[in-house]
Image 1 (cartoon, rainbow, N blue to C red):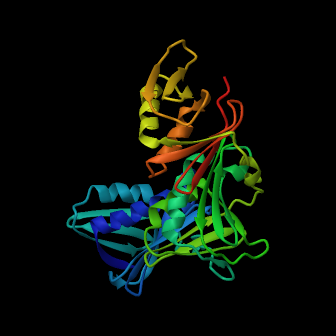
Image 2 (cartoon, rainbow, N blue to C red; image 1 turned 30 degrees about the vertical axis):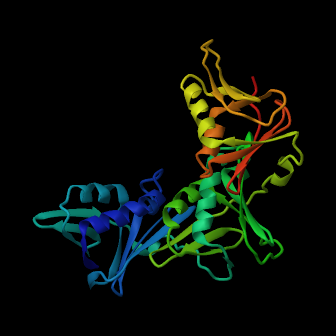
Image 3 (cartoon, helix red, strand yellow; image 1 turned 45 degrees about the vertical axis):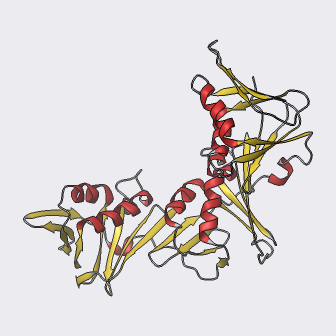
Length: 358
């Protein structure tokens, strides 16, 4: 194999695939990327078996077709020290060589034939959804998804495909995020839901800005665009009945200004992670909840529809995550009492939040 490529372009491709390699076992072939040069196209693959990406560079100056593997960390370190000019990448005697001017680097390789295969589309069902809307919705519920929950189902986004909408759901057991994408869908038995790991969602948000086709079955999801192929294994665990977690009735429904609410929270959050919010007919009062006897309090004038005071005990981060996920200048607060879950919503996003326990 031998090809010539601009150093910055090659560095960007390698950097894009770097998150997908196995960083736990550096002796494994999955700690390497697979580099394939064929038919004028460079394909760079990386996977740790759970998630994978193939990135494509077309119209490349390929002098000899072939393939190689390389340790990502070592390769990026080499590229970092080179000039922003063309480099020569070639294989010789089972080694990979990187050359630029009078500089030459020699890297060990694995046998390319041993590199893991990516799943194929085969009989997978096509997911008929606008990829930008999908990525936008996943971003909105991303903060509510847990990372290391004992119930592994909660470590991913549950995608519930209904006849007239698609619900994206995340929860960590103390709060739940739900974003609804409206639209007609074909609903088939046992094929109307999937659970995407949080790590995969993080990578998908970096990729889903062009036209993307998505395919899935019970075990994996594949996304394909003109420039990349992405796959992730899915979580095969039963997700909780999220619709039961949404209260059906509320005693109080208020519309509140996002910016004023944020202003009050930011003032108090500098000294605490939890706070008490009192909603009065003519104001909002924010008070710190702290274990070290420190105190903070601020009041913002605001005319509300409440007749008597309403008290919320919140974990600051939960409300910040919600308010930072909406664009509307107002949001809705639905509330029963200070011991029950309350609901905040705007722009198709709902968060059901349990009150903070003192």
